[in-house]
Image (tube, rainbow, N blue to C red):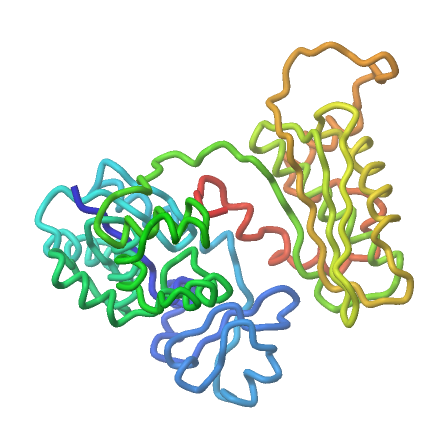
Length: 398
């Protein structure tokens, strides 16, 4: 059995072009939170020198004739799941890796399979995709990277594999960041072929068992299976940039509560309770601060979690500094169920929390929210902020 990696080409831009044909062949950029930076760009905009993550004012200088649109993850999810439906018709084993990437098994002629699937998605969804087929998922990902854009390539046979691996730096392998690549270079491992030929034990000492698996995968030995179902969460996180950095304590706390409510919603959607809560914040021209606390018992109750969040916030708050990013991490996750109550544990059910969850499930997220978030009225008024990529369920990547 072979493995294919399917990657949508400039997916956010392609999704915008599906509903607005005027954007075809034009330089298009998709903007992130508060329209501050470019999170995706078309190939036309890339040629103008615009980089992903670049502030909008710099992008406008490089590409003044570009068209910039707000991201819309609800729409992107619609097309992502439409692609998933098509892929599942072609393969019995599919991994929904990310919003625009899939891994799938191939048990027929790989070249014709890739071209037929590529054309089916273009015809039925309207999104151009690139497909790479190889013996392992790590090789398939490298093949699809080689075939972009809008390519369909099967690379079978060790000679062809080694030619590809010799031409790619080890950092091109998913899971090997630049810091890890630097460690490998100190051992003379520069290219993907070097990594494939390296001593797996040595690679493991540098990159742990994950790196060892990649070593074998590059040799054509399957070590990382296709995951048709997302594994159970070990950690659930929510957070991100707060847009304009702020030193206002009311705005900072409002963001703390907003992200906590997002975290609680995520936990409830997964049917999980948190036993431990960690919190990290980043200050502009300042440090990264973090703290954590263990909860009295695993819960999703807002009253208990907001008190824990308040306790953590006091530990990381730095008066006068501009805060620009924060994240919550819920761990020690459990499914709710019968358990023995603690001696000092309240037995009264949090009726307000239950009512809040019911109202929001009927009328939309944040229809009822904490008054502490009132300083963020503009954020809640903009529909594009109500749904993030992390809210798209079922992906194995995050």
